[in-house]
Length: 268
Image 1 (tube, rainbow, N blue to C red):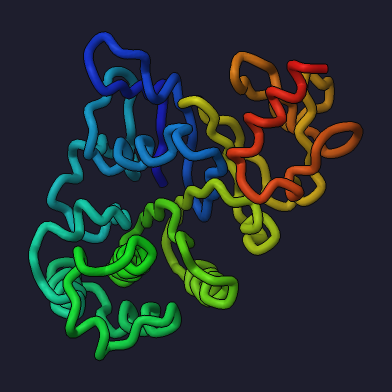
Image 2: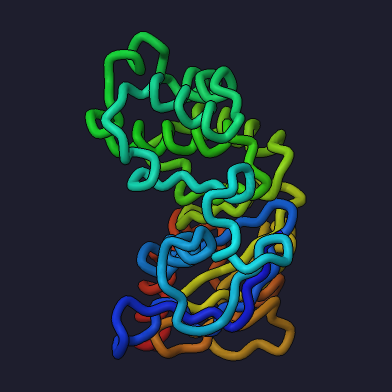
C-alpha cells in the first residue's frame, strides 16, 4: 500500500506547486484519469522518490519513500529515463533488470511478443533506437516482469492498437501486486472492473470511486448536490454525477476535452 498525505511538489522554490495537497491511499489496483499536463507523471515521480517533495509525506507499506532506496521488489515504474541508463540491446536490458530484481525475463519477452515486438527485433535494437510507443512497451514489460509489490505505469497504452491494448489489459488483470496506472484515455473505464478510480486536474487529485460508477457518469458544470465528487477545472467547478444533465464521461475519448467543455460552459 502507498499512502500520500498533504503532498505538494514544485519545480523551483518560488514556483506554483505542480501537485497541490494530494491525499490518497493506493491499494489493490487504481486508475488515475486526467488530461495531459495535469500532474500525473509528477505524482508518479514523487511516489518513486525521483523528485523533491516540498510538503507532505509518502509512505510505502508504512515506510517513508526515502527509506526504500536501493530496495528491489518494492516499487517499480515504467519510466524510460530510469530504465535506459545503460546502452544495451533491449534483450540484454531485460536480462539485466531480471538479475537485479529477481524478475522474470521470460515474462517480459512474452508481454513484448503479445505487443508485437519479437526477440529477433529486440536483439538488434537499443532502447533509444525504438519509437516512443515501442520504448513505452519495453519499459512497461520490464516494470511488470520485476514482480514488484507496487507497479506504477505511466500511460502504458501509448501508441498501441486496440488488439494489443487488450492483450496488455490481460497482463494487468493477472498481476499479483498493487498497480497504479495513469492515462488521459477514457476507454479503459470499460475494461478495468473492480479497480478504483481517481481524477487529476491541475495538480489536484480527486476520488476515489469504483470504476463501475463511471460507466454512466457525466460531467456537469456547477455544484451538483449528489455529485460523486467536485473538481476545479480552469477556475470552474465541475461535478461528476451518476445521473442527470451533463456530458457523458465515456463520450470523451480523452480527458483533454474537459477544457473544451469548460470553455463551452463559460460561453453559455
